Length: 305
Image (cartoon, rainbow, N blue to C red; front, side, top):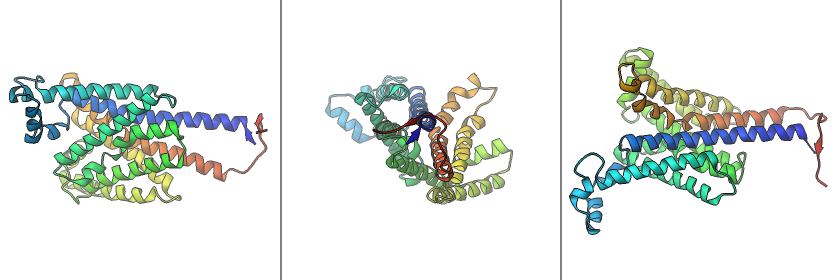
């Protein structure tokens, strides 16, 4: 027997969890769409090379047509602009995707594929540093997670498992740089110093601590007793690191206050805090249900005949 009230509470909870996954995928895709349409994006490293030009030349495309004679009129720039609009379409589909539409689900899986290639491009730009690829785990898997939530269920063990994999990949990748096992990116120090108003040495120490905590929560999320606390900390830290980009870069002295240059940096990182939030809310509900004493239902009951 399942009480009607319990069923409605579960339905509302499922809607919230699905909305979080939608927001995660839509934010990531729309943020990268802005990068590709406004800037060039990381795909360029996969295209600006002799091998790609040789392939284009084999199709009868000249060097002038390949590189262009001005801004955004070369084959590569045109292709990247087209990919940017594909990202826009994918972000729109995220908001309306339904389980019954195989076309919509296929578009979302295509979005995951494009994000995987994008992460590979970032990996190449970072001179083949694996943590750079891993750091994009939450972003890459966000559209696929929504597909899983719509098809097999937001609470299904496989859906949760993929969310955990995305969580661990992202925070391990970030922690690897923050703790200093690979050279810590200069913008890490710059953002910490600018936002907190501290010197380089203090910023470096704070980053080392943050990097260590990244690995702690990657272990903690696998332990039932510490998984909620780990997911809650990751939600906070993921939000802080996403907001750090626009907070450190924007200025009243810039055109549009620099929003066109920095806001998308926070938007595309939304999966870094929304996926941990998804896990925290799910586990909080699971733990509450498992610890609640059985009681007589105070509403209508649904029974199977």
